[in-house]
Length: 287
Image (cartoon, rainbow, N blue to C red; front, top):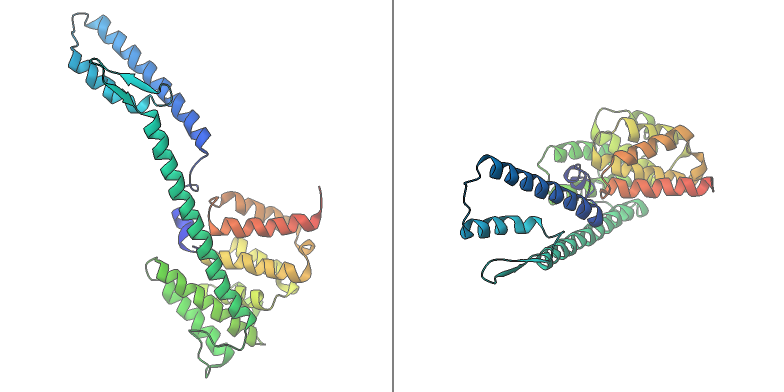
């Protein structure tokens, strides 16, 4: 989600590469086994009379089994019992990967559906949205929708909240497009999150290269809300599509790249920012 996902993956994305994690796990196992062997040797020297019976050996073997999957395929205990654990570990890893892939597919479908809602709002400026009051006029609707966004932001995170905010943004696209006297610069620097979102909606609906620097600065430096920054990136893309990606300042490109490095790899903001930077680099040509 444009809002919820970024908070959830602040720890660093959906996980490290399987081969790297396996190597790290094997190194840890080697250290653990070595330390255990050294500890056993020390105990043997300190207390040479200590006896260990067969039951203790079996229990120790069972305890060590889960940690030896990267070193051995199986272990045979006294009495002929053979424990297979590498195959079980591989099945668990495969199931986890299938679950992660299903989650990514669902995220992609959800992102596509949300983007379609907003696009319809931008293309059909005459169609009233779910939160549009036709009697209030464009300016009145922008103000009311900005307040509505702030109110929704104050509620607990949920899919319903994200859907509500997506619809508000779609209606802001329509309302700001119809408002000829919309003050973009003032809205971009407003302390009210709903007003800033309205500025992004305006630039998404009616891209204007005169505000490219102000828009980029606001999205990068002054926007603390993940949902708003996500649509701010989309607004920048809309402006660049109209005026050309070569218009982006070099220092702003560097700032965008630095921002990308801070974002979780599987967040919505990371996805759209990568697309934005790809557009800029493509326009710049080979380095």
